[in-house]
Amino acid sequence: MRVEPGPPALEPFRALMSRTVVLPHANIDTDQIIPARFLTTLARTGLGPLAFHDWRYHPGGAPKDDFVLNTITAADHRILVAGDNFGCGSSREHAPWALTDFGFRAVISTKVADIFTSNALKNGLLPIEVDAATHARLIAAPGADVVVDLEAREVRFDGRTTAFEVEPFGRRCLLDGVDPLGFILSRLPVIEAFEKARAA
Image (cartoon, rainbow, N blue to C red; front, side, top):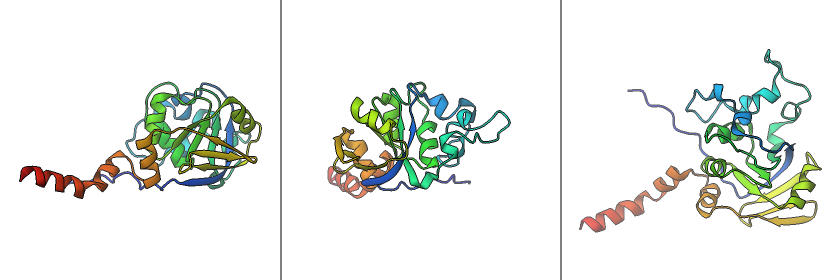
């Protein structure tokens, strides 16, 4: 029997200091993040090169020299700052998979679509909504050094601190570096003890 490999281990997320990538367009949907023709895999890895594919590459496949993701070092740019209503469209989990495989750990916008937010939190990506003034400062400063502190629920940039909200269970999973199934499995001894006590 062939056993498929499980999902890659998630990196615990506590405080992230990184430079930003700015995509200021509003209404970036999941088909722009990862086009539907690439939804042929159930693996979370290998999608990074396909993130924003139709914006990054010419029709023949050559990279566009002027597109921002082709001009940076991904390891140094792990925070994506996007326009309003990021992640709208279909509910594909491949969208956060593509972003995390590229190297992003957080996306900041004035509005992140609800279903994308749910999928992101389950897959190691922190969606953050900030006020318009903070967002405008970030949009105007591509490549800025930003701290995203999940423990404190704060974004720190340019000497200013902005608080953000995050769903508690999703936050717990990110802090622990697990997805929801991993969280349940980590509680397996407690679950088994409860079942044994009930059976008795």
